[in-house]
Image (cartoon, rainbow, N blue to C red; front, top):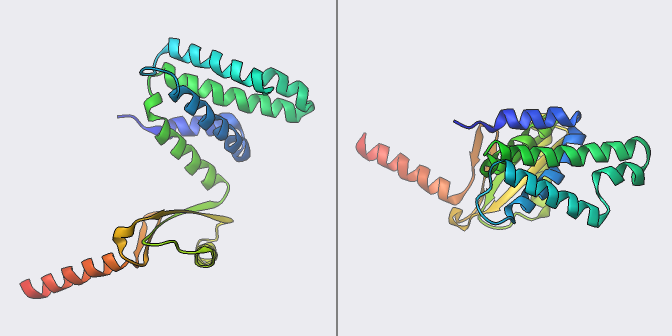
Length: 197
């Protein structure tokens, strides 16, 4: 069974710092999109080499070739950028060589989790029937910061009209269901228990 965690841990470790991993992750996402643009099923050394050539050519056209970054940026900042680009490029090629590129979304998600954990960022998933509005989101974020002690909170909000009204919050292993649909389901279960009991 494939596990994305070792891949994500290796990526973050190779980047050196959480900020370095965050920067490299952005390049990795771009390179994965470039790989998806290639025709056919992607896997193996030939596709990895082909993608590497395409990435290098595209970076050279835009002036972001890893080699020129060190020269253009100058000093250690240029070397860091060069290393960041090379890490993302090598990593996407490795996924192709090891025939697990089709798992890239799970790997990227795990990388994000590790980066957030190292940076003291909590991730909260909110499902709402309607747009919550900026004021309510700000209040919810501040409350979540107080409860968790996290440096920052990232809210992923998804609109689900089936909830009828209210919202559901998933935070780690906790679930708070303040939706009308959830309340109706609870009432149905309670009434069913009363009827059968």
